[in-house]
Image (cartoon, rainbow, N blue to C red; front, side):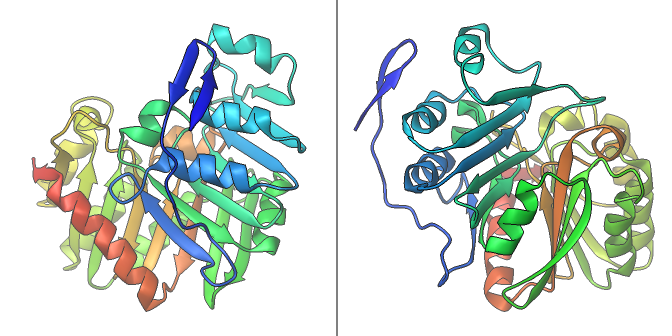
Length: 313
């Protein structure tokens, strides 16, 4: 298949990739198991009524081209600092908002036809969709998708596939959303597995150390670059508490923002565990509790594959 590029022509092969449906309402995708670019492009091609995309950055040409070729209503939202100059001519003519916030417009959410949502840690960039370690969850649920389309900040609760799903769009003026994650850490009884690009949130770090002290087995997968930079102090504090930290060995970023507690409670999102993410950024995180066994296996598989790409630091 041949696609038009702003700089010429690019070609890529189409592949068959499963999408969420009534029969399979929740699916998980990582760069280790799927092409995230092909996932997004396929989802966009299947759109029949509407497309709403909010991403920190949108610079992946196949994604943008696919949107432009759809003759249906769509909205695009990105952070005001991430648009390349050569894309501005398109932004000026399209329903494309460049948002300014106190922090970053950092969320990554794609809504298709008011019934399917794709969200996670992947930006709409070549690097994020093709190279870096990321997770996207696809959810086929009309109530969930329509609620996210309203762009309401705060905490909302849903019941999907027999599981309680809590969605928090940051920043929250009334609630303290980090407490939701802190409570999960404080309630952990056996295991905590975390994969995080940037980890600096003092309150959450202290809760992890206390969990370790009461006998909870903890493993943290942290981006190597971040562990030597923004997360260095946190890394040293965590390591001094005898919590094992594993970092990626390849050139790609470990860009995940997820946690699995006791093998049954899963947290994922666009928000790194930093003070800015919870207080300033337009970000989100999702809590699924408890996971059905089929989803527990899939999440455990994601962490197992991640373990093979990291080493103890």
